[in-house]
Image 1 (cartoon, helix red, strand yellow):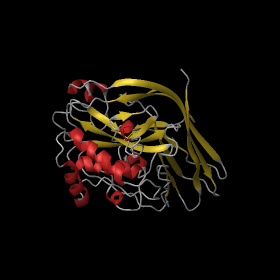
Image 2 (image 1 turned 120 degrees about the vertical axis):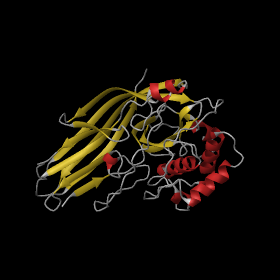
Image 3 (image 1 turned 90 degrees about the vertical axis):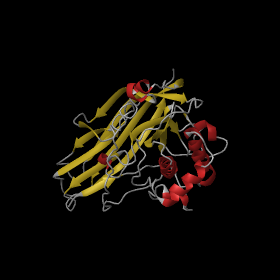
Image 4 (image 1 turned 60 degrees about the horizontal axis):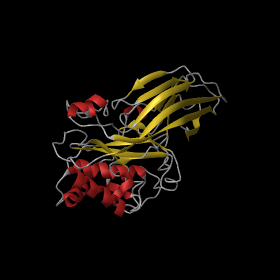
Length: 347
């Protein structure tokens, strides 16, 4: 018997059952040669300079001390023959963030990457003794940039990249396609079309913890939506218009400006705009008309990216980490705690 422990984004407060079946993961599309590939989607040289696009100006930078901690406990009477846990690592993502240092304990681990270029620390805890506890702690110093994007030159061709439907981003769904056509009617540029999507979501979705991972189409219903559905729907509508869009999952430093608007574990997105490049959007934090323009083609220096892509295969349908052990009938291993602590460092 194989036991599977999965955790999903806290912005939704969702937990996956150990008996939840795994779903097939979409394969990346072929990258345009002058644009970032799916494995390194925000390379400075490929994503901006070789495409003839200047990177956005950095308005402000904030450095954080970030602690990522997971506690694993064997509550059973047996020891696992095999046990592995993969923890997603925060990495450099140009031009959004730079990791200045990283310390991982325990020190016995392997580094692996998935199809999106996300990096993981893989631990092998086979033979974990009954009634024992293992704690994994990862400490970072991360510089995060505030970026504003100039949309005045929103002209040019769009690449055929990140434009296809996938699980929870149903850009080929008839309801999504119909809405995308209505929102884009009369809008000339890709920037105008994306802004129409952004405003529609802010005006029509109702933010709430819905307890399940519904995806873009379900966000059109009345059950409410959280950060994943806000991002899913915006990505799906953009892709339905042929505009590339991609999903980010990470953590949010909770300041007085974001208190009550989201949770520390958060999701947002980027869209590719001609003449501008990959441009961040946070429709969840921008849902209020008061905050609307603060998160359109802008990113505040409190968004820390952990993974790119809606369903990285290493996470097996989860977020931030995945955990597998066997046999499950003689052991009872659980993740007792998984949390983040984010502290801004004074200049």
